[in-house]
Image 1: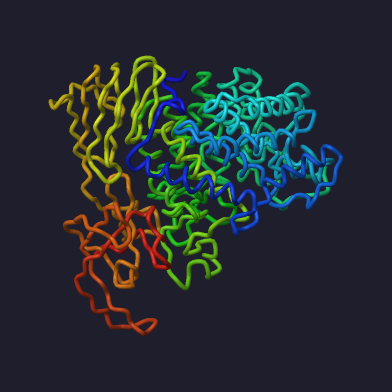
Image 2: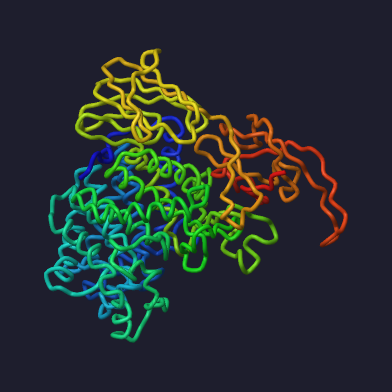
Length: 630
């Protein structure tokens, strides 16, 4: 059963680093992305708003205008935008934002069929193909994102219009797949985790039952998608119905051990599995989740928290296949890894889960958005060399600069909603305890009555101070990377119980609990089992992975090798408020010959490293996370 839960979306008011990012999303990203949805931003066409408008017209028997445009899952962009807007409204009222959201919700409601079905692609142009292609159709994927938005908007505003749309749609799906017993399960898992959220805000047991149903039947008939494909004469992309591993459907979920297939789909599925396991006390399901967690974090994850190493299918590869230059590491996949970690924490409070949640957020998730909030990365390689990245056939997906939008735009709104809901991941609670999973400056007021403020310059500062307004017990994560951590209560060493990486301390009103973390930069050595990284190292400081850009290093990073020695803090051009690092290195001269018998001359050099999430913000440049070590 659950040992703790995520904090409510209204429990946290951010300041500091997270507050700055939330302000950026609230003031820039959310308005900008709304203009994109309306096709008014001068970016890649979205057509999301018009799709809903045209679907509503189709249901009324009217002309559908210019029809449907976009990916089969285009509706989900609107849902994720609404979810980000909901979290923003929970943090800070905004009448204009709420008005826009309410208008979009009413438009979405008008596009819902009388039986509860809602999907603009199939409503506009393929009405007779509803539910025929679960493998590729993304109907339940879109519903899932709508359910997440409906739950969040109800929690933030108390308004029920979108919630009722969601419940009606969930009832329609329940009737088809549970009551009527129609076989099948989603090709792209997402609805499962969303149904659990919808269940918690609505109390509708059918939502929980439907989530459990889709998890329980997945892979029981590993040939389901093959049979489905044979029964129809059309496809969306021509996905291989026989590749059960790619669909996470080659065996029942309780027997799965290796994270494989499409990385985003995988971690969305595992999130739901972990949620259901902790909700129901299903030890067999929990054990499967732990095996899959270990598969990801011990054998198939980048040092940045990126997952899904191959462009082929946006998927996991095999153990220790983690190349830097061709890495896929989709931003959405790291968002999903945060989801999975958060749900694992609800079943067992262990710093190992929160450490990974932090790693994914501060590196890959944040790297997916430029610091001005107006361009985005889908893919997050650990090396980008001009003339090769984005050009060579093996690296066309590794574009050196963030585009302003994408035809497949799942990542930008996903990043926005994650930043705006950061408090749900940073803080949790049980009956008598406040859990501080991540360091996040701001005001915290939990449902169990405990309240406090958090003051910190994290992720660059090394001190986190909690000022208690209403006491109880507070459990603070001690990150594994912090070799020396000091905990004080009112200026004296705290009498804390350390358990599974958390320090549990009883606190009272007026107490000041301070945590001093070891933020000394450190050299990180990859496993010798990762062939792509033989003889290479990277640099970390706290939770942040650092990278080397040619802009800071004399126009060249390929000739650099690290030598060991004292790493000191410095500043990087045009990156205000960011701690850069001076790293002892040598630079080899560049030979004009392709191969040479003569060893290259080299000289001592002080290299400059910046946080990986700040990469590609100052124009085109070469970038490497790993460098040779001599």
